[in-house]
Image (cartoon, rainbow, N blue to C red; front, side, top):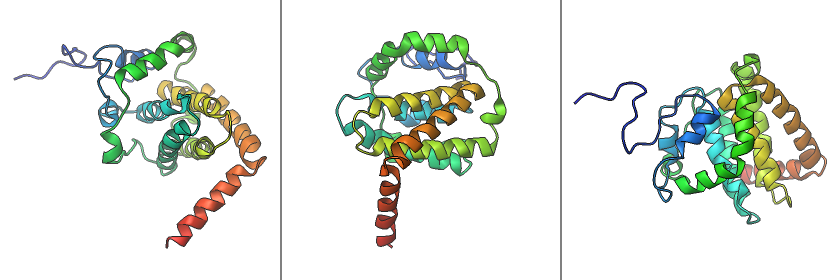
Length: 221
């Protein structure tokens, strides 16, 4: 039996992701049973440069659930995992098995994409690979990972009315990673630093939460 040629679509199979940016991200979830679960491991399989961006996109979906405390509790730890791996210099994300076997339903992702499709289409015309020094080199990826770590901590905190704000901010990070757009990444850096200073350092919640995590970790040793 011969394998399908590159670019050939197998009937009944989900469209393969070809690192083509937002348009292909939209196409990934357009076809198929809306009730079908999309395991994260399957979504990320075969991805190359855009793997972290797609992982982050899927990770932030729960942050848009309009139930206080639920979104941050689910999305926050996943964003922390992504940030730590980017800081460590991994070229592709590592996903634990119990997370890789889970994922959103196709219909859930499709409904979310439907709500933001118009601005995504506009962004698709604006974003492009550029200023790669702010995206590809290890120092840039490590700095992005640090900011994702800090914003992920903020997302996991019970700060009222901030889930959508941090979720949207992380969505822009995901799009910058998917499109390899250094200009958008620079904007994200500035916005994330402002958010950390205002919500974290300014209110003391980020520092207090970090100290609490360290005390729990040191007490378990």
